[in-house]
Amino acid sequence: MSHWVRFRHEDKISFGTLEDEQITVHEGDLFDQPKGTSERVPLEAVKLLTPTEPTKMVGLVNNLRAAATKQGLSIPEEPLFFIKPTSSFLPTNTNIPKPESYDGRVMYEGELGIVFGKTCKNVSEAEVTDCVFGYTCVNDVTAFQLLDKDESFAQWSRAKSFDGFGTFGPALVTDIDPETLQIQTLLNGRVRQDYPVSDMIFSPSELVQLLSRDMTFYPGDVICCGTSTGVLPMRPGSTVEIKIDGIGTLHNTYGK
View 1 (cartoon, rainbow, N blue to C red):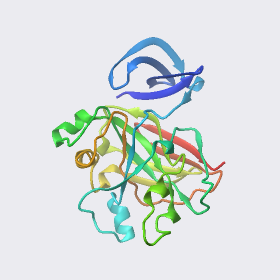
View 2: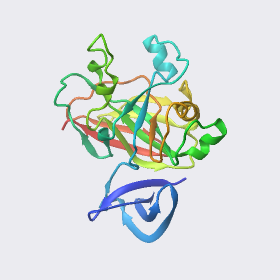
View 3: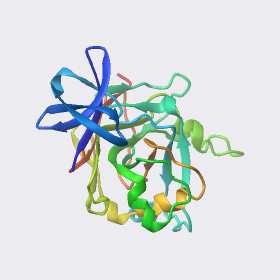
């Protein structure tokens, strides 16, 4: 298992593996046989960035059985998804801006993120493992009251796409079994979400297989697997942590 991070140190952007609060700097391409160097940098000396620079982030709707049951939703026959733009991406330990054009409820959604390591299109079940580089934590932030504000058109794109509404990190973790993971969301230190990946309607591997039928994924792209019960609004000044044991904790404030 490796924890890959991307960071800024002394005005230079680099990447490497994190272990015991020390980063071993690597060179080359993260997704193509990166080479470790002798340089070590303490974690406290760097500013962490998003672990990759995706071309897109694809988010799932209604993919947890517990949430579907609570909301009275039927089980979908195929994945239901939306796409977040690159301008929404934000790393850990940063502030999620409060939208200037919207004054309604803004909700956190703690999720598991699947990160691609190669270009993938229409992959088979057997090819999924080769396509996925690793996993990360995601906060799929949502301007909730925009979703159904206009009865003629559900505004999923706008509600999910404000600046900072796609936070992910702190690390990209390889060689981990996603089916064993548990996702927690803490709001101001209190656990509000606590659910297993095993409750997903479409598993991480199924999502890769099925979504790659519809679009091409590139190295660094992210699939957000959907969220469960316990979603609540964030007030300005709130702290939100998405915690997945084995991956780490994504920490952000909102609107401060």
